[in-house]
Each structure stands twice: as structure tokens, then as C-alpha cells.
Amino acid sequence: MGTEITLDISGLALDYSKNHMGNDHGALFQEKDRQRRRSDQINYDYFVKTNEDPAPLEMAFAKPLKEVLPRLEMMGFTLKNAEIAYQRVLQYKREVMAESADDGTEPKTLMGFEEFCDFVTTHAVKSLDDTFYSSIDGRDNDLVQGRFSDKGITSRIPVLWDNFGYWQTYSERSYFGSLIRIFDSYYLLRILAKNPENLDSEVVWQYGPLVENGWASEDQFNPNARRGQTFLIGTEGSSDVHILKHAFSILRPEIADFFRYIDIKSHPFSGAGSLRKFAEGLANIDVHNQIVFLFDNDAEGVDAFQKVSGLSLPPNMRAMTLPEMVEFRSFPAKGPEGLSSTDINGRAAAIECYLDLKFNGNSSAHVIWTNLKKDLGVYQGALESKDVYTKAFLKQSVGSVVSGAYDVNKISRVLDAIVAECTTIAENVTLT
Image 1 (cartoon, rainbow, N blue to C red):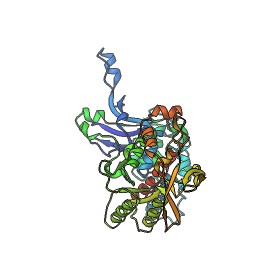
Image 2: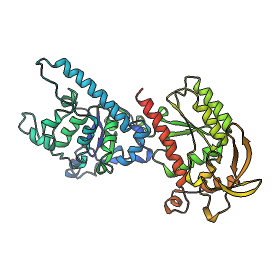
Image 3: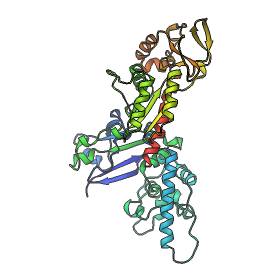
Image 4: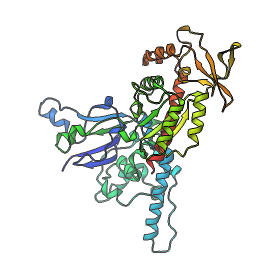
């Protein structure tokens, strides 16, 4: 009979292969998600009846959909792209229907994307009946179809012709799967995540039985983002790299493996001008890496960003500055006339300004004005004693963040802005 391997959510198979690995779903998971789970291909009762030692559970990757969701987004499987992919399925289905129509009747109206999403998310997957019913002679079709027996609805789903023949439909849950498996399983996961009740459901890729039966080797099943799915973050200096790597590790550990950085030991692009030249060089050659050029929110960074923005960057590259912050609109700054509060957005907000500047009761944080940027008509500034704030942040752990002992609000928004740029790149690349 062979051995099957599937990508499941609450027992609903979204992708399937037999006697070989099939699609590689390792990028959905991290090493911590490698664990043992019961397999529906093993009769565990046999080991109890024969008084043998309990059968070992089979190796799998498993994690809740809510933790898979941000990884889907980083890979470009967003709702925006899901709609585009769905429209392609609709177009293909309409062409097939037009070719097969020979009675002159008006073709039925197929579901639009929003209606399809509503259909997919009406019932939580875990609530669907998985009771086995034989439908060989058609007598139990109503039991198999369960809550999805209304042909007025299901006939309007652009189901491909081989869905029913390729997938067994023996329960309400499996029948539901045969209706919705019309495009990439990752888009289905993204749509299923629209129902909050699905977020705690486990996504499982169980490879143990396939390995045990000799159809694949364990070293084929590896977690983490693949090289082509990662993003190179180009920064103005090594301090930015240290801060970003630590921030992702404690604030966004579920996607930290998607990011790579320029070698921090010999950072070759120190300063906004060097990073700008690096971006200009890569824009002129056929580089396939996904890259985000991150400039400071200061005068030099804004100047360099504006020049890079004037280039024709390919879809796999984006440029951005650190985001403007309300907190920076009235910030202590020291110049020839002494200390005063002023807006440092676009003038003096390097990445250190986004750290907790009041940690351990510190209240002396301020920037110092340096040189005039004639092109922008503003002065460039820098945070005084910035290394002190960097060192304090690098000592922080998940515990200090959770307890609120260290304020990560601003640096968290920086990560959100970077992720948004990366998601835009992934969306563009995924559909090309």
C-alpha cells in the first residue's frame, strides 16, 4: 500500500504525497517544532493487545497556525496574493467550462474570492466531523458531505476536475478538503487563519512513517527559511546589525531565521553614503537576493534614501528609512544655544534612539547637532553616548521584555516596518 505524508491542520490534509517526500514544507517550521505525534498510519492498539512496549510516536513538525501565519506572510502567501491566485483559478475554470458547454445554457456563476473565504472559514476545521462513512455505492453521500451538501453553494466553487478522484472523501472533513483544495496549500492556510478558532489548531507535517519505511531519509526534513526565502538587511553600520539581530531574536523569534545581515566583523558599508553606493551597484546588476536597504531616520539617511528611491530598484529590492516616531517630535537636542526640545525626525534619529532611553531611570538622553546638510536644509545630529544604550539593550532577555522592565515599543515598531517591506518584496517575488 505504501506510505503517505501529508500537510495537515486539525486532521485536514492540505497537501499529499505517497512513497516520496513530495513538497518541502520545512520552511513553515523551526527546530523547536520537531516533535513526536501519533500517526493515523499506525495501529497503536496492536502494541497494547500484544502487551508489547508502547509504540514510539512518529517524528513530525508541528506548530499552531497562529505561529505559522507570520511565516506564510514572510514567504509572500498573503491574502492579497491569495486573491490573485484565486482569480487565476477562476479564469482557468471558466475557460474549461466554456470549452465543455454544448447546450447553449448560461454557465453558472462561480464564487468570488470573498465568498470563497467566507465558505472556507464558516466552520472551524476542528469542528468538522471526521467519522468514516463508505460512499462507494452513494448511499452515504449525505453523511459524507454533512454541512456541505448544498449543491447550490458547492457547485459554484471552482473545483478542479481531479479533486474528487485524487482525494478520498469519506467524512465531512475530508469532503470539505476536496472542495477547497483548488490552489496552493499555503494560501488555504492563510485563508483558514481568518477564522480565529483555527489559530490554535496544529499544522502538522509528519515525516516519521516515511523515513521509518525507507521512502526518505531524515536529513531531507529540515526546518527554517530556505536561502531563497531569506532577506538581506543592508544597514549603515555594525551597531544596527547587533541591535536588529537581538531585537528579532527576543521580539520576533518566530521569523528571526528569515533575516540575514552584512558581516558585522568587517562591515564594508559604514555610513549612509556607502550604503547608498552599495544599493546603486546592486540595482545595476542581476542580483536575485531579496534585499532591504535600511537607512537611519536622520539627515544623512534621508538624503541617501531619497537618492536610492530615484533608482529603478528591481522587485526583489526595497529601500526604507527607520520610521518616524511621535516620540521624536519633541526630543532634547543640544546645539550652540544650549539644550532645547525639537523634532529630530529626519534629522538625528539613528537606530539607538529607538531603544529604551529611560532604562534604569536614565533621563539624560539627548542628541547633539553636528553638521548642516545643505541639500535638505537641515542639521545632522547624533545621540550622545549611544553605545551605552546599545549595550543595555543587548543585555535584555525575553523575560525583561515580558515583565515590562525594558520598553521595546519603539524598536518593535521598527521591526514591524522592516517586516512590512519584506512582505511587499515576497508578494512581488512569489507571483513572478
